[in-house]
Image (cartoon, rainbow, N blue to C red):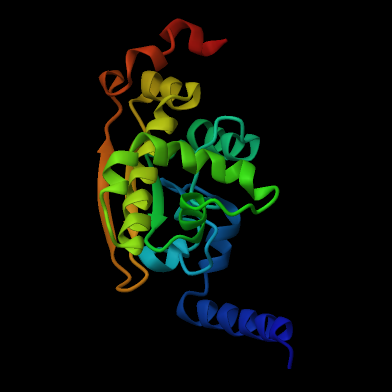
Length: 215
């Protein structure tokens, strides 16, 4: 049996288990999607949003990319963000990084990875902001994990710079932004910061004029 065929067999077993536990599970899931959370996480296969939070399908709307980045020129991310905020009206957005992240480690070095270099450049900019603190750390793994945390903090800040978030804050005082870091060694989440829907939390240079947000 190939690994591919094994996935299909496991899918059938999972579906049967869900129906046995709750015969109406898929019926409810099919009819609506009303998650309260948007998850912006890393593409790393070891960090599945539903499993590590103990939630069911339908509870978290998920976007994943290398090193859980919020890049203002990334139309994929921005489309997910606008749909989650404006249509699904999520109450919380979680930016979740993870310790030992390969993308973060790559950004700390000088090796060329081709096209990926353009993506890693965004992480290198975060490193530059916190270079003094990170360079003061001797252990390499600890350097990586420090940048993991600083990167999550900066991505949360980049979220509140968007007109999408600011319009939602103006109209419905939501969503709240949360920054997390997940530990692969113990499976635990560390809370790094929470940003409440308050325009005072946005540096004035990044605040849009409220009446202009409808344009």
